[in-house]
Amino acid sequence: MNKKSLTSKTVNSTENFTDLDILLEIGSMGAGHATTTLSQVLHEPIKIEVPRVHIAPPHLVPRIYEKHDTIVTAVFLKLRGTADCDLMLIFEEEESKKIAELMINGVEDGGVTREMELSAIEEMGSIVLCSFLNAMADFTLTKLVSPPPELIIDSFDAIIDDLLIKQALCSEVAVIFDTRFKRCNSSTEGFIITFPSYKLQRMLATKGKEWLDNESSVKKDALPALLR
Image (cartoon, rainbow, N blue to C red):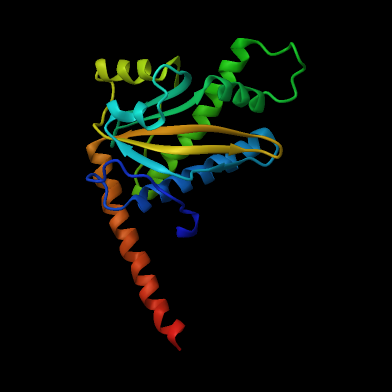
């Protein structure tokens, strides 16, 4: 794993993780998986960046972006198994249109229906969320299998509140990755929210500590050579 891929980070609460570099590394891995898959699907170079990560209780997530009544499109994935985790990819309305255009590029004007747009967004969401899921699986050396995603269109607050009211979330912690999708002549902003269960948090923390210890050992081994 390469720490050069890490960038800035924002912290709202860190009690559940030993170091946010762990989360940024996972975000970088997930973005790398998604970049490869989307580039192959779309037959053009697509770059995905994760410049920041935030941690907060789920009910405070809307405050990070101040998007309370903003209509958004969300692709929601509920993982249940060895380690539970809920994942959600969210785009504002205008950004979701860009995603649809990106996914169905080449269709003549007037030939794109609303159903096609929603299907394209859901496909994009599935690819990206499964990529992040695979990154967590690779990091923890655990097999994580995802069910089909769910597409939700509503205000930001309504989506989060509905999940909380239904007690649909498996975690009291939300980890949010700012996400940028870039192609040759345009870019799109979105964000990925993960709700890792306590068990998955512990697994990430344990593997993360091993990774940090290994990174520290590599640096110590390299120091004498630098001093020669």
